[in-house]
Length: 221
Image: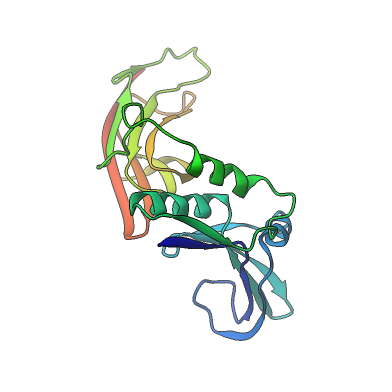
C-alpha cells in the first residue's frame, strides 16, 4: 500500500473567511504551483485540525477560500508513510508543481536512506527548560536574552508567552509552525522587567488540541 498525496487544492466561495464557513460555490482545484504563488499575496494560515494550509480572497461580501498542501503539510504526510511502514508515496499528479522545488525537497528527504544507528528518534513528550536561570542583567545592559529550550513530539503552530506571578502577560512571541524535535528561543526583554519570578509558557496547537508547558524563570537586576 502507498499513500496518495495531492499536488492540487480546492477553492470555494464561502460566506466568511473562517474555516467551516457555509460554502455556496465550488470553483475548482488549483494546482499546487498556482496556489503557492497566489498565497504570497494573502495570509497563508495553518489549520491545526486538518494539518493543511489555506488562504482567503475577498470576493464582494464573501470570500474565496483556497485549501491545499504546502511543503510543511506534505512533509507530514511523507513522515506518516514512514511511520506506518507503507511501501511508498504517490502524487497526483507529477508536474502540478511545475518549477516549484519545495515539494521535491521534501520528497528527497523522504527517499534519502538513513542509518538506524544515526537516526535521531523523535521526542515522545513535551519538555521545557530555561537558562541561565536565574538570569542576571545589569541595568546598563541594553538587551536581556534568557533562552528557553523545549522539545515537542508533534508539529503545530506555537507561541511563547511570559507572565508575572499575578498572571499578567508581559511578553509574547509567535514562534510560527514548528516541526517535532528540539527548539531554542531567546527572550529579548531589554530592561523593562523588574527582578522577580516569571512563568514562561510554550503553547502549541496540535491535531488533538492545545498543548502547553511551563517553566519558572528568575530575573535578577
